Each structure stands twice: as structure tokens, then as C-alpha cells.
Length: 467
Image (cartoon, rainbow, N blue to C red; front, top):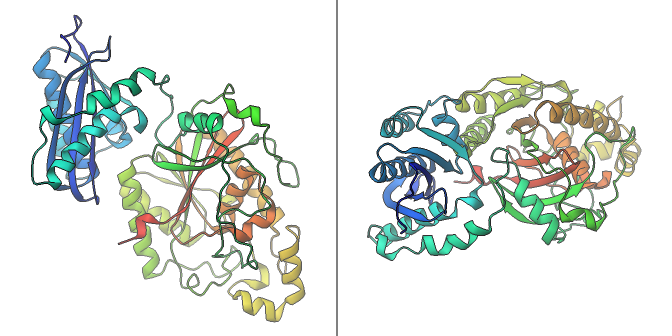
């Protein structure tokens, strides 16, 4: 530990974790010299069974108290990778959860108001506190408490801190730093290609990305989502008839373009309806079904998961009932309003509405073959072609991206709009729509950058639905 800084400004970095959420939990906090980055004090504790958010708040309280012990009249700069804690303690988000209110009040009493400011930082820049929290949880697993003398967190993170790049300005969920590294260092392609016979668009079951796609991809863990692919294509440059977009030149992945905070769309497919398990076409021209009992449970599960992540700032939903119900569950959990966006509605499947793929094959074989062969072909009876849907979705994307630059927005929508957003971001051909798995209540994400690049993350994540 170094001598105290001559100034009375201190940096506190804090984190908490739970192995199970709720599960065995612990927190870590470190007080740093703002001039040298040297460690002045560390705190960590195993707290038993708790949630991530409780552990994060307890880490904050411990870090503030450690700073007060060093300098009771210090001015403190708190840095955490929890968007929830940062926004709530900054007064921008309401604190509704009963477990959070007393912890937030305790944190607020450590220093007088006005002497503490809060900043969100990406997880990769909070490794010291994260390591301390994990040391505490490891100690708890052995039936012990964390001991400062056994900690190696300061040694393990000092080199990384000294080499860290300037922090990105965007909120969690933006992949600014991770995407830049991905462009510079990685060019791996997504695996798991499935060359099976195309399945119907609603609830198709196949691999994520077709072999026909030539877009460069990369893998990098960033923020609350794992980057699965990144490709370059100006968000505003969609041709009148969407086509597969050529990959960006390899030298374009070396950084340099505008990598400011993106508009990040967290893409949530609605929960199940009675038609979902039967894999029936269910678009915007049918009966507009409500969520089933299973769908309502899924909506609540994803609401809880998104609340735990703490990244969603706004919610936009398709006008169809199943999406509005799913969005309402999330909005109630997060304390946000829902805005309806007509451009996020599902494809109109015409005369195929309510039918299974097999039933369509039996009744309209020629129309189905044409639909599978060309994105310009529409379902029987005046439905929408995928080309028409792509133009609608792309226009909606451009409008929302411009309106929400630097923010993380939940889009509650359907199979085809989500697959279309992913396809366009990847520069994949239209036939890729038939080769993406997209389960009910699953989460994907696309971040759109000012330089025209996009990163696709956590395609078809359903981890929040597991028990």
C-alpha cells in the first residue's frame, strides 16, 4: 500500500457477485490513489446467499466506508460496472426493490451529498474489485472469510490498469472497447452451420448463421452481452431492395473510425402463445393471440433477468398483443414506460396465418416453394414478402438508432423482425432467415455505431428461462 495522496480525492471501485443470483455471494472494493493508481485499501466479504445487486450495493458501502476511514472529508469518485447501482445512486433511476432501498440509503449516509460522484465503467476495467469479490466467494465456499493477507488482486490487476485504454463513454451494453479489440485482433467465423432443409420462419430450428454468409466475425466478451459477430455497414445506407452486403475490407478492422457510444438494441422475442409450441404461422394478419400461461411466466423471467442486468433505459414494442404483454411485464419490473412502434410488427403471412408448415405445404405447395426460393415472394393471399419486411424493419432501425444514440433500448418484437435486424447487421443473405434459431422470450442484441459498424451479440440467449 502506498502513502496517502496529498489531495483529498479518492477513487473507489466496487463490485459484487452471486453464483446463482441468488446464490453464494460476495463483494469487493478497492480505494485508489487518483494520481498514481496505487491501492490504498481493500475490502471484501462473503455475505452468504444474496443477489448480484445486493452484493454490488454492499461492495459500494464497504468501499465508501474504507475511503472515509482514510480521509473523512474526501471527495470520492466511485467507479462501478453496475449500471443499476450507478444510475440509482446518481438519482436518475428510481429505487423500487425493497432489498435495495436500505443499502442505497446506507451508502448515501457515508459521505455528505455532493462529495461523491458515480461513473459506470465496463467490466474489464473493474477487475480489481471483481477479483476481490471472487476471492470472498471462494473463501466462503471453503467455510472461511476473506483475508487481506491472502489477496493477490492488487498484483493481478495493476498491470492491466496501467495498460488500460481511455474509458468508453457509453452505457453498459455498448461494446465500444470490445468491438475495437475484436476488429484489431480477431477474424474467426461463426461455426455450427446447419445445411438442413429450411424450416418455417416462425420458430425455425437451425444454426445461427448460414455458410453463404461471408461477413467477417469476431468473438469478444464485453459488458452484459457476449459479442458474437461484428461487421461494417452504414445504418443509413440500406438499398431500396436489401441485398447481401460485402464484408468490410480487413484493414477497416484496425480501429480509427468513430467508435463512440452506439445505439444498442436489446432484441426480445415475445413469450409463447398457444400457437408457438405447435409452430404455426402467427403474424400480423392473424388472430393476434395473447400470451399463454407459459408465455406469461417467460415474460416475468426475462423481466427479472433484465432488471438484474440493469442496462435497459427505454422500451419499444410491436403493437401486437403478445409483444405488448411481454413488454408490460418488463416495464413494470424496471419502472419504465412502453412506446409502441408499428414498424416492429411481425410479417403478415396472409392465408398461411394459423397453419403449420406442413399444412401450408399441403394446401399451397407452389406458393411455399416460391417463398422459400425468393425474398420477393409473398405468402398466399396478399401477405408480406421478406423483402418488404426488410425495408420496413430497416427504416424502423434507422429511425430508432438516430433517436437513441448512446442508449440501450429494449425492442420487444417477433421472429422475422429480429432475424432481419441480425441478418442486415451481419450482411448475410436473405436465406439466412431460415437458418437462425429464435426461441420464445429469447434475447439477442445489436449495437449500431456512428461509423456505420454493427456488433451482434448473444443471438438467441435463453439462459434466463432455465431453472
